[in-house]
Length: 144
Ligand code: FES
Image 1 (cartoon, protein in one colour):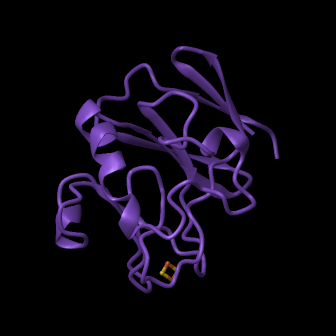
Image 2 (image 1 turned 180 degrees about the vertical axis):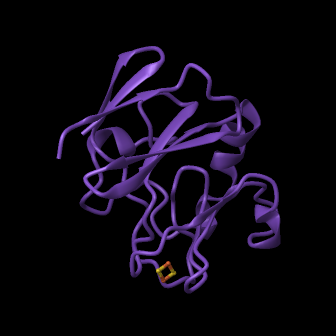
């Protein structure tokens, strides 16, 4: 499949844009400073907080799992059996107390934080996959 260009010039804080790449949904989310701060606070509840499992690109192996802290990019497919998790920008604390936003998979209840890191105790074995991507300029991302 051909690489896909994503224009994020109009992407507001908290918003997600979805594109399709190689037949898969890819999410791009602009995270707030508050969310970035929150990401450091629940490592103990995560299965693989540092993304050490294989199949993660190098630029996913940092605190934010991203090239730029505020821009999170992931393949929007649950690492359990392939459903697409739901983005809960406001009500995720109903799933994990103390965590305000994240992704919830309706199929079997897997939960991921705003860096796509899977919480322990759910069926999904791995963090969400960060696809290969590069920034062509501040507002344009090439996925693939
Ligand atoms: Fe997501 Fe099973 S497919 S929890």
